[in-house]
Each structure stands twice: as structure tokens, then as C-alpha cells.
Length: 142
Ligand code: RB5
Image (tube, rainbow, N blue to C red):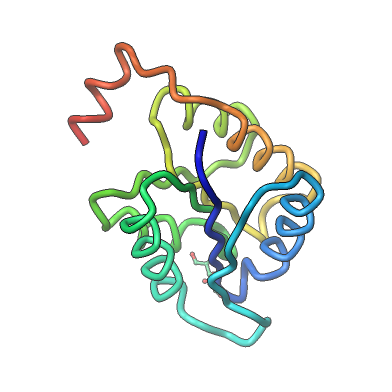
């Protein structure tokens, strides 16, 4: 199980980040919001970097990143060796990203996903454990 959840987004993911915070509060998850804090345009690599730095110092925690599509911010985060960010558009992808890939960051597209589905993806990601076993060798090769 993880300690806390770091959240970070650009303007394209801001609204979904706010919605996700409501879900985390309702379900008693501890979280820290690293921004952004409005719909004012910002650059997603800056927010991917903020979250990646936090996970470096808190390797018992998870992250959730948001941008318009989830693509840019997941690409930026995956430049950091300790980050395994999974861009998920379905509950099954969220499940597999944890079971098989030991993803420590979930990336979501705020302009792509319907809010209800997005929260189902968040729930699945947070409640699913890494299966280790044969998957460990492959994850370690990353
Ligand atoms: C910002 O307009 C948009 O490009 C960004 O949120 C994201 O979709 C990039 O991948």
C-alpha cells in the first residue's frame, strides 16, 4: 500500500484534477496538490517535473498527472528514471498498469475522458496491487 498521492496538472487537466480531489477526499486518501491552480495556460513539462521530484523523495507514494490528453504530461514524466507513468483510458488499462507494470503514476486526459469513467480509472489504479513474479524481471529491465 502507498503513503500519499501527489496530483499535478496543466490547464487542460485542471478541471479533472479538481474533480479527482473530491473523490480522494470522499474516500479518505491523503493527497498533495502541486498545481496548477486555474485554467490559465501553463506548460505541462513543468508540472510533470514537480511531481517527479516529489516521488523521488517519497518513493512510497503514488502520482496522478492530468493534461488535455494525458499524452504530453506522461511523456514528460517518463523522462525521469524512477517514474513509470501509465496513460490510461479504460479501467482495464488501469488494472493492468498496476498488476503488470507496477505503474507509480497514472496519467489522465481531462479533455478526453468522461468524468465518471475517469474516477473509475482512478479508483481501480489506487486499489490494484503489483503482481510481481514474472512481471518484476521485465519492470526491472526498464
Ligand atoms: C494544452 O493545450 C494541451 O496541449 C495539453 O494539455 C496536453 O493535451 C498535451 O499533451
